[in-house]
Image (tube, rainbow, N blue to C red; front, side, top):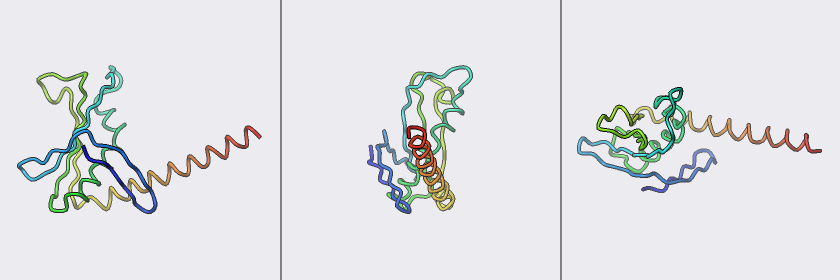
Length: 130
């Protein structure tokens, strides 16, 4: 696992990746195991979207750590669905180096939005109690 330290425009996130793999075809993958129960209404694609921000951050960190590589893949592995057919229990998100500026802006905007929501939400909570 790798420790994640992302500091973009005074935004700081930390965490750990489950597993990072350097493959022979010159790309880096991060594998993230999930144990969520998959219901009939929440498909694997739903969960891929749910974890999208986390995965993009992983990929941006890997792009910083491996400047010689151009392709980065985040692979969600849903262990409760595991069988011999990979498409039944995995989903991937791929980042190419040329997409880094776009995804960096996406994450920065997402964090800014979260900060705004948290500030607005706490102001609302303070007013409600007072």
